[in-house]
Image (tube, rainbow, N blue to C red):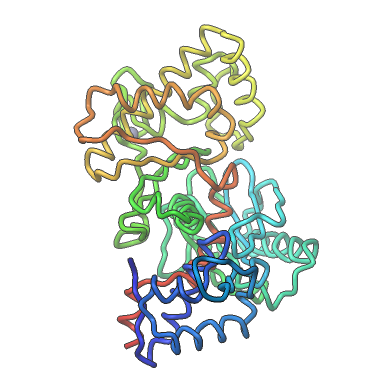
Amino acid sequence: MRTGSNLPAVGTYNQTLVLDLIRRAPEGLSRVELATQTGLSAQTLSNVTRRLTEDGLIAEGGKVISGPGKPRTLLRLRPHARFAIGVHLDPAVDAIVVVDMAGAVVAHAEHPPGRSRDAGRLIASMGDAVLDIIDRSGIDRTRILGVGVAAPGPIDAGAGRLIDPPLLPAWHGVALRDDLAKTIGLPVVLEKDVTAAAVGELWLDRGYDVGDAIFLYYGAGIGVGIAIGSVPVRGVTANAGDIAHLNVDPEGPRCECGMAGCLGTTLEPDTLLREAGVRTGPPDPDALPIDPRPELDILRGLAEDGDERALAVIETTARRLARGLVQLDNMLDVGVVVVGGPVWARLSQVLREPLRRCLVSDTAVRTLHPLRLRDSRLGADAAAVGAACLLLDGAFTARPSDLLITQ
Ligand SMILES: [Zn+2]
């Protein structure tokens, strides 16, 4: 358990710690419970909760009777005290969401990805989309913490710049973070999409169930976010989690790296749709990426109807996916995999059980526990919601490392 400090210099840490506990308790917490959980003195706790109340972040809720003495007043999060905006830059469709402090999506929009070759125009149209969703949601701008952008890696995290995101040639080398911040007048953070999704899952993790976990993001691209001890693993350049070239099937299609059966190539939507006969005709390497969701719905429908070829594709996909995840878990020993993203949202009904079975039966399993499978709490917009949670996490998650900096 994380405990607070009674030193005056760490007021901000204590505030974030207390807020963190209150927001993870759906019914709220009494001051007595907070004192037990944080180790803070009654006086310090009283000061902290008064400041949080003055900032509008918490309010007194109902009363609870437990044992003798007067009923205890519960303190609850005011989820609409602050909001954050999340944008997911994706080859098929850009998603944009407004999220409240409880992580709930209060507004959602989708836009076709910008095709302009002019970086200024791309930034301007993304800025318009952000300002438009703020207008439509009717939220006071002063309550918006900022904008998180989730993008396919690799990213130059220090400069807030995209490098060469696959299938997004127009965005190569664009200094997205600073240029977008200038355009809209709000703080902007840039994160790799899979890490953003992991941050979102941690934000919504009330029971600390996924503090040690692999977060598989299954969309136009496929990658993982990793959390160890409830902290996202970013790596030295914030580009951790690229599993595209893990070998998962020696019989699989050839990858651009020269090997056969790399995870990224064998599991991309185009491979599944072609193996199932849903997408036909020769692949056109110069074609613009198309939104695969309608075709994935057809694939799922065929599998649900018992179509043998579709069922075989689903089985192969489950086996390939499990092989990759088991190798990761053998290395990290986390025991939980959380799966989300738009492709998973489309196929989970037919893919979940085969995957669950393959995770246990894969012959490469070396850990002492079976790898548990969970669905993402973030839904199909995992990366966009996660991007918004970057702002919430940055402002309101108590980490002992912050304490070291402030002392
Ligand atoms: Zn490869």
